[in-house]
Image 1 (cartoon, rainbow, N blue to C red):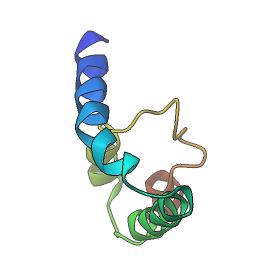
Image 2: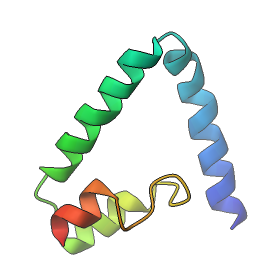
Image 3: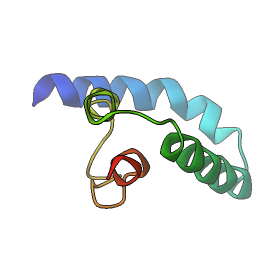
Image 4: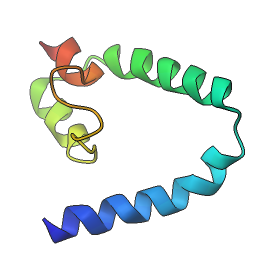
Length: 72
């Protein structure tokens, strides 16, 4: 879908300068913390689906998405 691809490119373009300023070890730590926070949000299924529409499922597939797994 072109709209999704455009949105994903815009998000990456916005985040790239910030992520580039981080060391690899810090980036891994941030990812771990975000996964924990997302898993503990207490979203309902519908809220999780709303949030996950912003994700790139090629990078974070549903079988290991912290939100989807937590909703279970």
